[in-house]
Image (cartoon, rainbow, N blue to C red; front, side):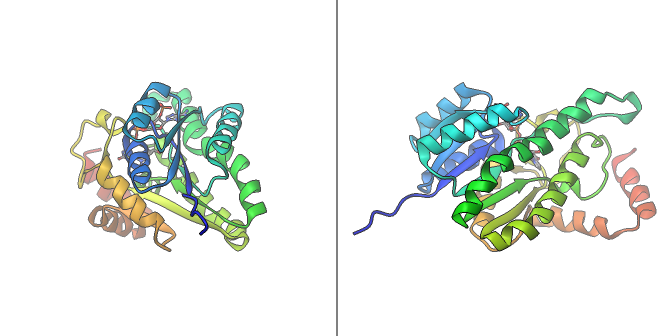
Length: 251
Ligand SMILES: NC(=O)c1ccc[n+]([C@@H]2O[C@H](COP(=O)([O-])OP(=O)(O)OC[C@H]3O[C@@H](n4cnc5c(N)ncnc54)[C@H](OP(=O)(O)O)[C@@H]3O)[C@@H](O)[C@H]2O)c1
């Protein structure tokens, strides 16, 4: 009888928050998990929870580091079956006190970091005519938001990227999905000084991501109530939207 090989999940940004929760959850479900991030001790702590997790040191903003990390993941766990490109940073900014470095950093991690991973993942997946890539964006990419001019555009770029690569990669047998969470309680959102509507835990977010990964939906967006509101706002003409959002958020 053939022994069924467990799928290999590679996840970036696995040292905390949604990525750590998803890595542990999917290891518990039997996936071989390559958990990538810069903070190796955090990844080793996850491996202690579940030996199905392989810690991989990776800075997604550094192409060479991504190449080395992907090579290590393939050596340890074989070809990547599913990649969840989740690594990201979030810093609220005020464009009236413009800080170019923050804008550049958001694009370097949240967007270019994904391109670095795609560069390593796509050729092998095309050669095998199979694979699955999930792009982590955010509902913050749907429209401009207060304090979000560094983060939001990086996520809007990821949303556009996921839709655009779909046309080229889906016909090659690669499943493409886009993940758009609302507010999730993590180190990233701990900086927020406002009440976050419909906030959920990172473990709850991980369960919703896993359910989505197993579905045929292109977009995995949650929590549903918050997403419905954000999608409705997306339909408004810019003038009405800006007025309404400024009023809601006291800006
Ligand atoms: N929390 C939310 O409400 C929310 C909502 C929508 C979307 N998201 C998205 O979900 C993803 C995960 O965020 P989170 O909320 O779970 O935040 P988090 O706890 O701060 O996790 C961010 C992860 O990204 C990694 N990371 C940051 N810079 C990196 C780099 N240069 N190279 C490699 N890894 C890097 C961090 O690991 P190291 O520091 O160890 O490298 C960490 O594992 C992000 O893309 C975020 O934008 C979050």
